[in-house]
Image 1 (tube, rainbow, N blue to C red):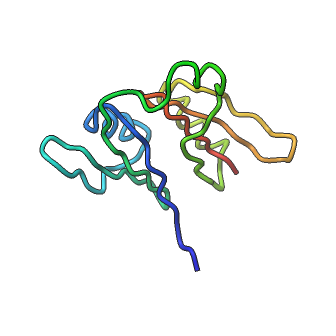
Image 2 (image 1 turned 45 degrees about the vertical axis):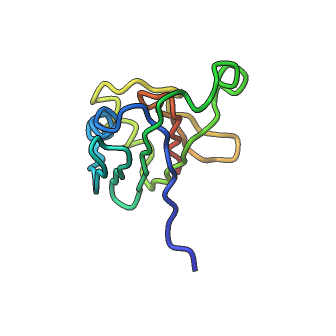
Amino acid sequence: MMLTAEPQLFVSDIAASCAWFAAIGFAATFVHGDPPFYAQVARDGARLNLRHVDGPVFDAAFRTREADALAATIASEHVAALHAEFAAADVAFHQELRTESWGAETFMLADPDGNLILFAG
């Protein structure tokens, strides 16, 4: 039985990433290293692992070619309410709330390193 998944995002600054995630309601469950090179942020049942890297993981050509390449998907029961919460906090959206052709409500955020996170329900 599988219980959860913890996608790993590659980031250039652990502290800055933790602060960005805190602004959208995630809390750091741990930060490891001095200087920090690994951390985890969580909100409700969602967990994301953050790993420091010194350079971009994806080159610019990849991001141009694959503009919506996701780093993580977070399922939520109340996607529209979550979108409204983030909008009220003045979060910039990579993709605004929409209803997909298969019926799911989705929106996307890009973290400071360009990792795309899809929220879906």
